[in-house]
Length: 308
Image 1 (cartoon, rainbow, N blue to C red):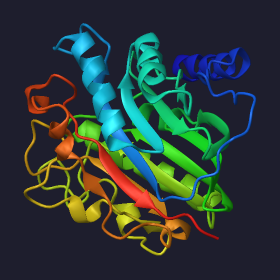
Image 2 (cartoon, helix red, strand yellow):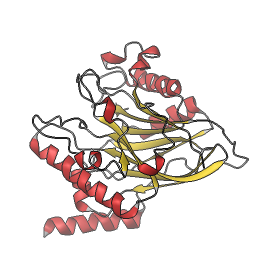
Image 3 (tube, rainbow, N blue to C red):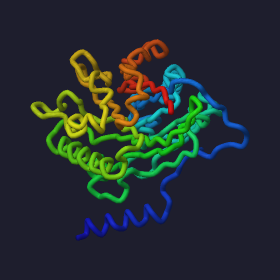
Image 4 (cartoon, rainbow, N blue to C red):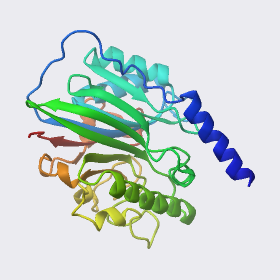
């Protein structure tokens, strides 16, 4: 009973106190640019960004290197995990991506790590953000005491406007049974919610899934996201082909891809086939990347031609 009461107090405080702080999402005055281009979407876990206790390297080097990677990827939307020093993060975005980009940070986790979106304000218009499944106690627990982060936007590009939702997740880590169960139960509730409320809509799930699609990181277990993989009529798991021996999305774990992207079927016609990539080529701008001077994860990107 005490646990339930504490949870209700948390939810009421969250809803009444407005803990969701959107960062600098306000649109400036003046005309927005119209783009005709394919759009690039990135998810990347920037390991304990700006945290002197969690990140083992030099924080100024991490900031400089992360900025180099973001500029090198030249994306239109970045979905980022493990942001700790939000002031440092905001400075990095403003100083390196310029006035065309805005950012928004989640403030509804129990720990230091937060999630963030950085987006081209000309393409992503009317942005709103909130926790996804934000009144569900099981979701909060199963996703490692941090709700998925939902960004909704009117995407304006190539002479068309489309409402698209992006759900950034940072799933429960670790390879023991209890953590696997939390990932599994989180995936079940996430899919149930999307089936119920997003059927036929344009949406994307991306982030640090902390597990593979071909099999689980827990020996002998199937992927905890098998429910999505088994429903290709509704969900296109575009990073599934990357989940093969020889690929890795983290620096330290060979033959393991835990950073993933899934799109709703309505976005499949926009997806550029085979454009999903693990960006190990970031060593072009940070040659010592594998030494742990930036992050223990590699970015993952995909490309879309949005059209009527």
